[in-house]
Structures are given as C-alpha cells and as structure tokens.
Image (tube, rainbow, N blue to C red; front, side, top):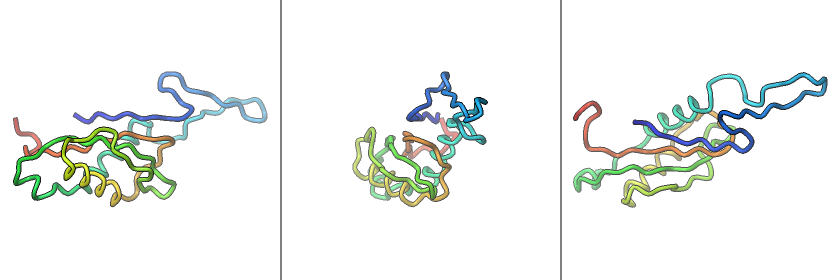
Length: 127
C-alpha cells in the first residue's frame, strides 16, 4: 500500500485558500493539472523505480521502509533530502537517498513531500 503525506505551505487539503486577482475575480490557488496527491504518488513511483536494492542487504534478508522527506526543485530534481523515518538499516536508507538523487523529471509540488521507499524481498503480488 502506498502511503504518503504532502506538506504544503499555504494550502490545507479540504480547506483551499483562494487568492483574489486585481480585478476582484477569484482565482484558484492550486495550479491546474494533477492533484497534489497524484503528484506525490508519481514522485514516489519515479523515485522507487530508481532505487537499487543493495545486494548485501538482499543476502542478509534485510527489509524495511525508509520514509524520505524532500522538496522538488523547478528542474524536477529532489532537493533538501532527509530521512523522516529510518528503515532500521543504514544500507537501505542510503540506497533510498541514492534513488531519490538519481530520479529526474519529478512533478513539481510546492512545499515538501514525504515518500516511502519500500525494500521487500517478496515479489509483488506474492502472499
């Protein structure tokens, strides 16, 4: 299950802030296009696709989830990258950071986003 949190500076989901244009007409404060949730999900997908599971962690059976906190720059790169919650393994946390640094073309999202990076030895769809 993909879980993420979007932190926006002046927008609270469910209570959208409206700005007023010079002529008095209301304009939407959120850019057109995909919603913040869709953008955050795409950011998570693109970063996860760049992550390489460390071979030594595979051999040792190490699994976990690293929660990354980052900002997306205007050029679609991860900036101000930090670990919001560790997987419990330095190897996995470092691999998550490397994946985020190598991801390109991330959708721009105002503010910071938290992205879970999952490391699992179980193949998707297995029970």
